[in-house]
Amino acid sequence: MGLRTLITDVWSWLDYKPVMADPRRPGRNAWSELTSSWVPDEDLRRLSAYRMLAAYDSNQAGQVAAITGDDAAGEERRELGDASKLVDTALGYLLGSDQTIMVPGAEQIGPEASDGQAQAAAVQTRLRAWAETELLPLRLQQAERTAILLGDAVYSLAWDPAKGRVLLRTWDPGLYFPEWPDDEQDAGEFPTRVHLAWEIPEDVRRGTKARLRRITYEIAPITPASRPAMSEDGARFREPIVGEGGDALLVPGDAQDPTTGVITRAYPWSAGRPSPYTCYLTDAEWDIDDLKHSDLLYDLPLHKATFRARADGEVLHQLDLQVDFIPLIHITNNIPHSGDHWGKPTLAAVLQALDELSATDTDSSAASATTGSPIIGLAGARLPIDRNTGQPLPVKVRAGTVWQLNDGGRMDALDTSAQLAELRSRIDHVLDRIAANSRLTSAGLGTLDPTALPSGYALQLALGPLDSLVAAMRLARAHKYVILLRMVQRLHQAGQALGWPAGQSVPAQLTWGPHTPTDRAAVLDEVVKGVGAGVLSMETGVRMLQDAGYPIDDAQHEIELIQTRAFDAAARLADATGDNAAVRAYLGLPEADADILRVPLPEAKSNDPE
Picture (cartoon, rainbow, N blue to C red):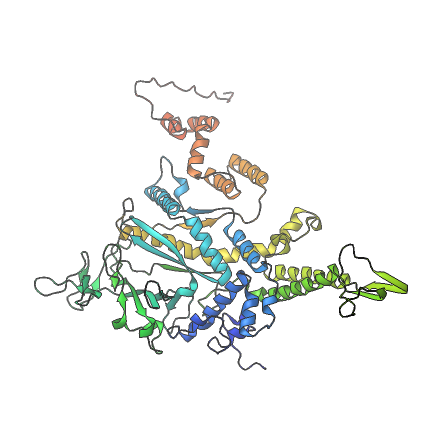
């Protein structure tokens, strides 16, 4: 059948699969849950792409091909984990040896540090403590593997009053449904309304029907204060708080313009700049049977919804989160094209090559069967006879089998080893193409013969595409993690958490460790020479050692330990300043007791002959 339509979008690289042509077409639907009436048509291709990529990751692409009619023998396809290996390899290079939260200025803290440097150090300490409590490295690996596999990943942040801290969670991007304005084409802008939605299957044992759950975050104008309430039929909702005069009361701290009626709020991180907007949270469920075909995710009927309640009793219906941002962070695997909002997975460029590799593996497996148990031709053999039928019995090749041949008889074996060798050679060729087109390189995948590289410089050139790939992937994520750490600070401020004072958010960033092995001895020699010559500061030198993989957890503490033993540098400081207090502070010693006599330093002798 010829091509009827040509679709060019973020998922065009998957259009050679029949399931992507029309996800709702009968007979080609490999996952019926995607065709529910509430799923918008514009999201079907994205969700189908996610499911297809997940099938490759779990070695089920052949089963999907068999179901959709793409390959009748798909169930017999050999899938040996090559797709999963590519994803895990890219994840390892992206994450590097470690990940560290850094606040600019925090490493320069000292006895004479400014207020800004002291604040930076305090915020860095609190963020690192929060990251350890919330298992940030684990969440990071969960989300980033999803982003590399599917092209997108989602984080959520939520203030937990009971725990007194911000909770970090990761979400399947297939549950993420943002709403951008129709005229918004910039991928760097944020949506004003976001849904997290999924179906809850029917539970016959508990007697519950199939339901649809939708969590909605929305940026909207600030409204008067509200409180949880319950109707006569037991339905939960929120009602406005009315004062004695019948006027709606405001949230403490809000102000209303008497002329326009606009309510504004001064957030702790933007003092002096009141905002008329806040973020509202709604968490509700619908019975699938109550939804009509025209009820899409973005405009579900609220009168049929059942609103959920938080552990502290707050009804999650237009709940004011008292922040002016949506606490969701969408991670893309690459830098999206202009006008696009979705990322591109690492497997996108090599998906057809993975199909070719799987087909070659299948053929190789079949060929190895005839090579290991070859077809044998017998001529002039005395075969055993079935006494009942008088017919020769079937011949089977077994170890120790002896056939008697007549005069002139012969036995020939069909040799298919040459074909098997050719198939294995083709497998190596396809693997090389996958390594090159994915930019993970043969050296990065560990399939390159070490003897093929004459020098370390040749290895560096071989890893060039991998270096550029990792740099682009980290660039696509850098700003998103700055936003995540900023949101963590602001949610703690909004929750009035202990130790998080009000004020403008301090810029923090997530730094990645080296993705390839480094020459630690060369880096150490460079640091020693640079710091000794005065062209590198101690802070820069210690940070270089950290990046090279030396076990330095806290750069500032390491600098303090170095200074407490740097007696030659302390002596030069004493010669330069004559200030014993500065020398003691440099060495980390307490202030000298006033009763202790001060020993005068000898004056330097002049070499002037006059």
